[in-house]
Image 1 (cartoon, one colour):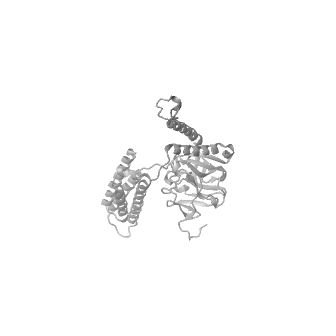
Image 2 (spheres, rainbow over the protein chains, first blue to last red; image 1 turned 30 degrees about the horizontal axis):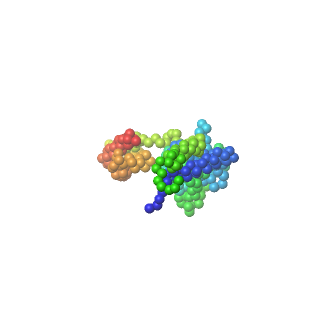
Image 3 (cartoon, rainbow over the protein chains, first blue to last red; image 1 turned 90 degrees about the vertical axis):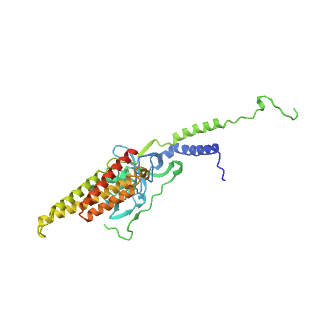
Length: 190
Length: 172
C-alpha cells in the first residue's frame, strides 16, 4: 500500500504552489502581458465550466489560420467580458446549416461541441471582414455569440486563453484543436 | 545528576509541544489569503442571452396537433376525379404540411431529449428513451401514411412528453 503524505505536508505543498503563483500573478510587469478571469455561465461547456480560473495572454489571435480553435476573451457592447472559441477565420464566409458550421461551404468537424448549432435563418450567413473572426460558444444551444453578434474584429479581442489554473484537477494548458472538415476530399467551393 | 527516573523535573524538561493544530490553522489562513490574491478579479461570460437555454415542448405539441388536423382534412377531402386540380392542390398542401410538421415534432423532441434532459432525469422518467423512440417512430408513420390513429397516438405521446418535461423541470 502506498503511503500518502501527511495532511500537514500536503497543506504546506499546496500553500507553496499558491504562493509561487500569487507572487507571479502580482508582478506588475507580468500583469501587462497577462490577466486572469473567472468563467461565468455554461456556454463554453464542456471545455470550460462555471467558476474555472483562466490565465489569459493579452494578445489577440493572429490573422492567419493559426487562430482557429483558440479560446478568446472579448467584450460585448455593454462592456461585459465574453469568452468564446474562434471558429471562422478572416475573409471566410461562415454559414450555419443543418446544425453544422460551414466555412467557405465546407462543413467543420467539431468534436469539442455540445449540442446542435442553430441559427435564425436570416442570420445564418456571415461574410467575415479581413480582420474579423467568427466566435462561437462550444455549448451551441446555450450560447450568444457571432450568430447574433456577427464577426468580431481582431482589435476587439482582448486576449487569448492560455491555461486554466483552477480547479486543481483540471489545471492545464489550452491547445487549440486542429481544424478538420467532414469531407476532407472535397475542394472548398468559393 | 546521575541517571534514573526524574518524574517531576519542572517545566524546562517537558517535551516541546509542537502544536500541529495551530500550525495548520496558520497555514489555512495563509492559504485563504493566497486564494484571494489568485482569484481573478473579473468574470468572463460564457453566456447566453436569448433564445438559448429556453426549452419548451410547446412547439412539438403544436406540430403534433397540426399533423392530426391535416390527417383529418385529408380524410374529409373524399374522392374526386384525377383531373380535379383544386382537389389535388388541397391534397398536396395537406400532405406537405403534414410532412413538415411531423418533422418539426421529431426535431423539437430531439432537442429537448438531447440537450435539456440529463442522465439524472431518468429517475423522474425511467421510460424516457423508449418513449422518445416511440415518438420518432410515430412521427415517421405520420409522414408515411394518412392514418388518423397514428396522428392521435403521436399527439398523446407528445403531450405525455410535455408533461414529463414539466415534471423534470420542477424536480430540478
